Length: 449
Image (cartoon, rainbow, N blue to C red):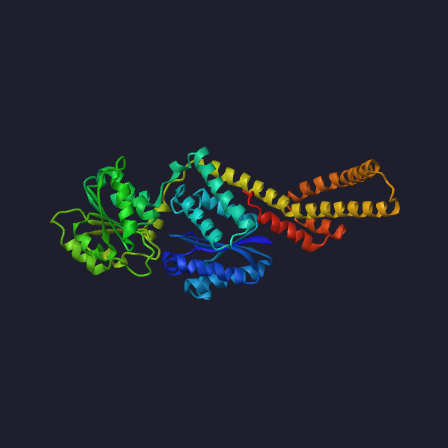
């Protein structure tokens, strides 16, 4: 089996296509279920963020896997396959590992070095585990990606190369001013209560806004976010929760709005925004809108409204293209390269382990069978002699198998070493089902990391 990823991101597709291809949680679940139902795939995971949609799978055929995964992405995104195909990228085996590790380190983010992606990778892994679509390969891959991302942030200054999409978006709204001085004493409306919206609310609170109003479809989550913002030892900002239906009405009293929901339609329409802008005091600063949702929450027509400044994913992509790269990026790339090589060697070595275990099991069975035959031919053999003979035969077998099994593990860990397991099974005529049973037992072992 082999690792394959098919996806599209802000680097390969225009925002208009990404917006239409966005998958809500229910669609992601269905995509994973259909991926496992497809013949070429035995494992699946979906990484869906505001600027990428990627489907990871363990497949037994490359071309069939690419065709199947591409078709599934088109079916579940609602974008026709012919239209979607030019924007898709494909990574296979080590290149797929390199891609995910780079994503985890923030090297492939719209804002280089941002750490928000680690939470999204963790969510993707949790979804695959919950739906039982992530097996040994994808569990190992995503867990290692999280470790690599954390290592990059702890051992380098990649954080200085960029920041979260929230901070970057607020910097664009501030138009060159310090976010803290620009946001101070403003009234903020945050639409949504997920991870991105919560980060936006906390960032604005720390910047010194006068009030944060949280609008969300689920009242409990909105109140929970308000509680976090106002609890002792927190930001100390004034905050209150309102229903999602009240968000347009709250525009009139807001100076800055951040929206990031999973809604499939517009949350703020141009007419509501225009009315709010016209209701602002003469000479007031433009109504600042930051739309971090995919598909968009805020009507793009707001770009043309007087007294309104809208920053959305599309304009963020344009601004990020001009952002300077930090020198630490090279160090992170070196970390990624080393971790990819290490992961590949470990996976190749692990691939042959069930075969080696099956070989040793077969050898033990041969010893047991021969000792039973000897006992039948020498029924009067004393227990002491029988035990000594058994131990001697086992030592002989162990010594004969030691060097080749150690060497085959070493060879299997090297590039191109995947065929050694097949050679071992052929040379010793091992039962494939026995090898598969060892693999299944390893996957289900609760002690595995």
